[in-house]
Image 1 (tube, rainbow, N blue to C red):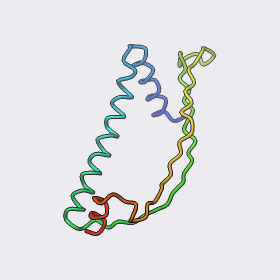
Image 2 (spheres, helix red, strand yellow):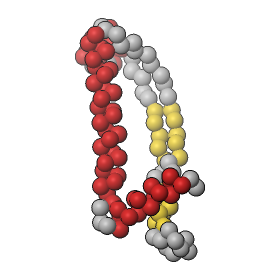
Image 3 (cartoon, rainbow, N blue to C red):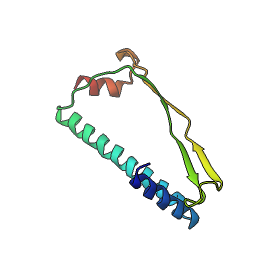
Image 4 (tube, helix red, strand yellow):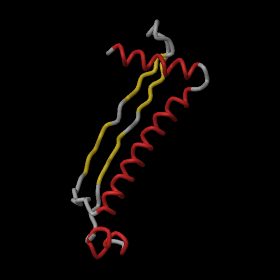
Length: 111
């Protein structure tokens, strides 16, 4: 394990022990959501300017999410631990024919 990973796990466990463990995950999710919002704004701006180039990809991706092991005591790994299995993530697309698209999307696509 890398030292930075161990430090991050230790910091997370410390926050959990202090009763504010969810704050760490809330902040990480908020940062990711803000990135998506900013990317969306940039795409809308490019659509309005007419510089956005549309292309389609038909995808199907299966990702095995990580299993996270959170030891209750970093100094004694024989102590109990929490195992979080994030499961399976499936990402796929369903391409629509132009006639099946809402009118608003067809107008944007032709712009």
